[in-house]
Structures are given as structure tokens and as C-alpha cells.
Amino acid sequence: MAEVALEDVAGRVLVEHALEAARNAHAPYSKFGVGAALLLTDGSIIPGTNFENASYGLSLCAETVALATANAAGRLRDVVAVGIVGGSIGPAGLIDQGPIYPCGRCRQVLNEAAQMGDRDLVIYCASADGSVMRRHTLSELLPHAFGPGDLGIG
Image (cartoon, rainbow, N blue to C red; front, side, top):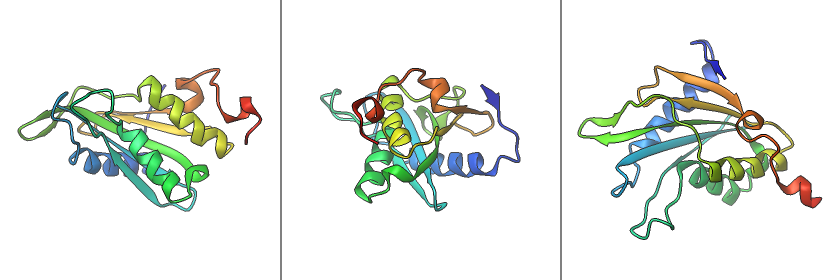
């Protein structure tokens, strides 16, 4: 885990886009908004936000929404990095609770993009106000991952 220096422009930009996406979170049940932003090989950014459902099990995480959007555009192999931000939703926006990390399911879904693109994704985990940001690689967050490579697909 590494605290990110202010000069890490890619991380800062991704976190800003993730925060903007989090403002659109549909989280009426958990009251916990999450935003994600994917950086692609050509520098474009794809946002995602959590989308809850009354049945709970059908809810989608922000990272999953962003990855599905990238896949729909034929860009799943092009994901290089992801920024994630979130917190409890208060009257004035997200309440800072420190950096948040992708859940286990999202780590596995991120691994699909990583292995398809043959790269170790950079994951920026940030606090709701963006003042604390930690840089990880996906392999740090999900060691010994199972994915397409294990099935002979690349």
C-alpha cells in the first residue's frame, strides 16, 4: 500500500471522475454511494456508480457498472487503472470515512479485465473528499486470482 503523491495526476483525475459518478449513486437502501472511473489505454475515462435494487442481491457495484460499460463499447481489454471513492450519503453529499476498496466480487470482475488485457491494473482507493488516496495493484488486492488464463483464454 502506498500513499499517493499529489503529482500522481492519473490517480487524481480518476478519483475526481469517480467522485462525480458517486453523486449519481442509486443507493436508497444502504445510503452508501460509490463511484468508479476506469482509465483506458487511449486516455479515455469510463465512469460507473453503484445501482441498488430493492431485492438487494440484484444490486450492482460501481466498478461492475463501469466494467460492463467498457465491455459494451468493446474496450474491456483496454482498462489500465481504476479510481474508487465512496462514503455514506449525507445531506451535503458523501461523508468521508477514509479510503474505500473494491469488494471481493469486484476484485474478481476487475481481474477479468486485467487478464484479458494482460496487465496488472492500478487501483486508486480514495476517501470521499479525495484527501487520502492509496495506490495498489490488483495483484496486491487479489493475490492468486483465478481468471481467463486459467481456462486457456487470453
